[in-house]
Length: 132
Image (cartoon, rainbow, N blue to C red; front, top):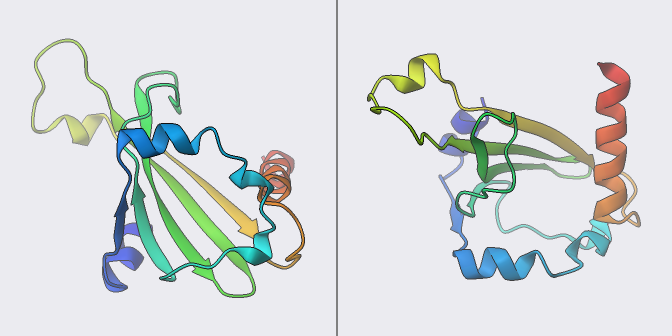
């Protein structure tokens, strides 16, 4: 669904080099108020390369990007995508059929424009645990 929405809305991609991705980790961007965020597109993909320290399932599905969808005055929907790092054995072009890449979905509320990104993320995670 997120890939289709991205495809229907211009297929905008932002590619971040390894150097920029590493430097971004040293910022305090999560302290920005959510109301200060402005996006050039309502739907886009951020590619920041294989992050070997972000394994979603403990089985080699490493985060490599994110689909971001903005619903004005409501939420920012984020789908972290992964790339399976296959390290042993022959790789078949059909491996994707039996070894589906993992993903992680989160929705950050835009309703309180004064809250920090970190607070919105914490609330999203807390709500997810209450549902499951």
